[in-house]
Length: 277
Image 1 (spheres, rainbow, N blue to C red):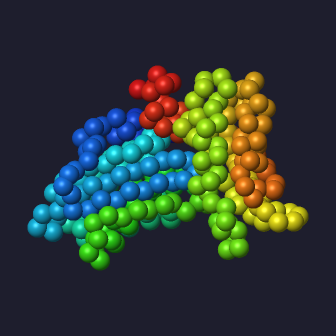
Image 2: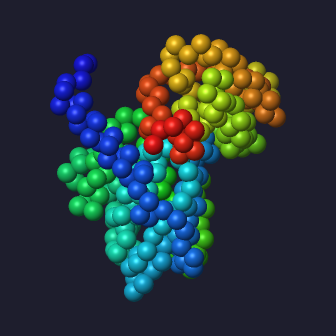
């Protein structure tokens, strides 16, 4: 279906909102000392977030974030900090629940609390489950930190659950191993890691079709459907996965839905190398 002019303008407006939050330095950094520290990672795409909070009289007096990731994950956590600062911990949990409902259940933007009004810019992300995980990483990390604080802890770690979980007996192979294996693989043309570029769309771990071991299926994209280095890159990824101990079968599938967009999918470091500001 062709996009009408109004839809195109709205999409451009939303993209501008996300880029503005991505670039905003207001809440970037780290608070020391702090009352709550939470660190979260997405082991497949490599996104990482660190949150530090200071509390005063039951309210979030200050909040800062660090880490690295795509425009979506960074913009979302910037919105999180803006919405939470000055509110109570109960407010923080309420806003997190509202945001997760909006992203996972595709609730209407009109139902978002006023403090999360700008989060409507993330509505288009809901079409792509892997990108929803980018938007939720900061919020899930926050909730992990608040849960630990409620039990007397001040440090928390959160690791995102990949879209496809291995069966119980396959626990010897982890998604982190997959991420570590393909992380060094670079796009042959622009010499930047495919993980930093955001070209990894998902991964599955299953028992091998025959014999002992694992079957790994990785879904990825290219910087362009016509990329002349596509076969070379796919072979490199296939070889990297095949070297993981215990991996017997490897499938590398190409997907162009969504079409790769470095402004929304590449990490901050990759964007700097690409000259995208």
